[in-house]
Length: 120
Image (cartoon, rainbow, N blue to C red; front, side, top):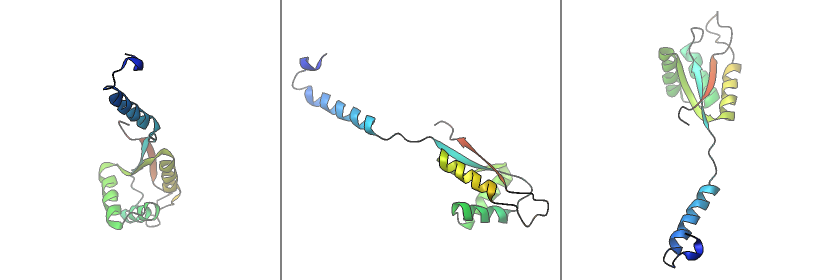
């Protein structure tokens, strides 16, 4: 049905549909989300992880402890979900954080990666 053949009753419905379509088109697109994943190793203490997460992410000690325990028990933990650019920055900050002075064999920072949020 062309617009010219619409009845006056259909006009408000068509206008509402048009407005809805315009809102959808003008809606900003959301950037894909990425997870920053911290990987477990035997060369870093809980205290190191807690302090690092506090300094780099602003997490309170309680949250840092919970994340340290999770990475220790499961092998990995998601420490942040954000945009790709921000995730890359945080991963790089983890890699640059330095070694754990409490463990003599520690050679450097913990390992971290980023990956897309599943299902996005």
